[in-house]
Image (cartoon, rainbow, N blue to C red; front, side):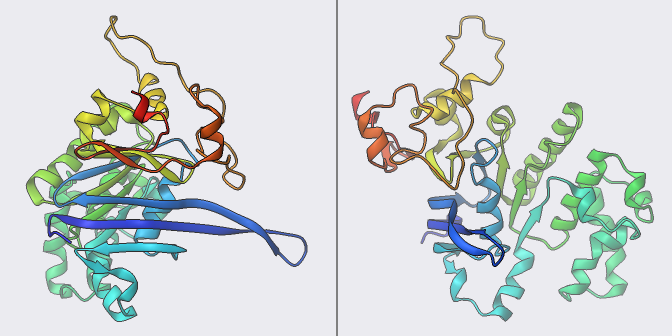
Length: 324
């Protein structure tokens, strides 16, 4: 493992049991994440994109141990997380943090935001009560919050300010890896830009590494360094941002990009993906995109394509790649 990578994921699987009947008998499995592999470079923002139901959030929560993985390997700075004791995992927690989509739901409405931001420091015994105020104020300033807000309650803040509070709660522990799960989807467009700029600053000025989970390719293109596209529990394409947006090779990636608004009148439209994402508990055989793909042939319905490198750092899972 090179020290270049903060996170390395190999063959990650997360299956949920499907139960029916009075006694909850298991009748099958929902393969929410099915053989996913990727690596996140130090000091970069890695975008994980796809429609709702693609498994993006499950990947993030499994990385943090909020879900127990079914199979596969998760390494943080070369250390296989599964081999760590409960004590070692607790010590590692401050280094790996999560920013929620809805910050208000994760805030105690009766707790002043200064206390909410600082409580994790005391829980992990990373500072004394005497040091707490100064540390909280420092992080609040980094996140664009006024020190005068310290004693206010969550209901007194706008959605954008609440998300800044959520980011401050993660940042207070001095993490080097943050998972941001749809952190701006519930915000007004004008506020989204401010939060995006904050993430950029945290990467550029403080070296924080991010997994940025989103369905918004416009935001991902602006913010991320590398991108992986998920569909129905699997990664179908991964590349640097510039390569993915200029040379998309998988039909699903092409369809997602075609749906992004453009001001260029000369751009040629690509066929937009048809239909809804299938039931994850009953995925199509072969390529999981085959039921919606305009290029699907018999092979696509029978054999699962593997991620193949089509150029340095650019991998695609499609049977038609060799034909191009």
